[in-house]
Length: 397
Image 1 (tube, one colour):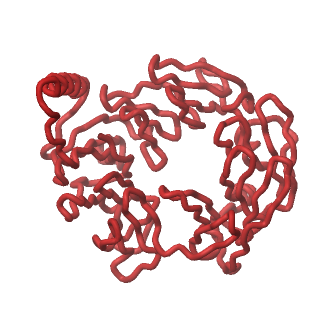
Image 2 (cartoon, rainbow, N blue to C red; image 1 turned 180 degrees about the vertical axis):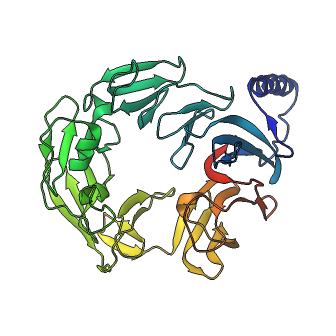
């Protein structure tokens, strides 16, 4: 790629030197005027080196200064089996952690964890993951990888300790809510929850039933997975969570199993492949979607709901729920900035910038067609020049 250079330890050293110079200047004069918009975007590009399809991937760091895109830098390149798809997290402004437990140091430009597993949680310097089946000299169980020491440590067997809790963990990580599929996936001992049943798990205590008759009407689970594996759960604190009794019927559930009705929302029971979802937007609103009706904003306290008109993307950006022939409308601080075929799940924002994966039409299948960035400093869109873009990881300073 033209204008591409590798960055590594030298870039880190340069940052240290620059910081020292600024400190010296500040001792004798007012701090210099800060340049706005000096940020970088981490993206993943697929590569074909053998002519037999994608066999490698690389992480590019694309810098923006005053809203203008600068030459990109290669943060890492490696085999495709270290898959950098959706779900990768950028940790401590240095490490990319994938859902399969590849840990890549984009400053050093190398992979630092030789093991594989299923990512459980990122907790400070510790990354918790699960190994389902023993391989080589690695036993099955729950492990942590330390970002400072680059060492792995086994912290328990399947279902043991706070990282072994199956299902959705509470904010403090000391309890979780699980269905039968969660229990099977986490490898906890039988017997599993019955159909339509949720179980409460606490560290060091026996599990307890929170009741039955929870349901999801959908064919998305197919014949392989429990339909309850699609049940949306969102913790509202450490003592209760929001879920659905059935499609369109939201309730809160306390730790003793008490259910409190919240709202009932009409939905189309003719839709087959529903995938209900509960999430918080960057601004804090609770959103319910994928149940067979439009995305709605939930007011748990007042037991109300309303259709979402604009999806909050964070940092003053939002996207319309309604589309036309040119896609969905994007705004920044209420001002229209363009239309795109994309979705909130394929956008990353920071102050004054939005990056997104855009398609040429309403066809959200496979890799993105192109990756685009809008800057408030210029008021313009830029398109990243890549032959085979995979996904956007996020923004960094």
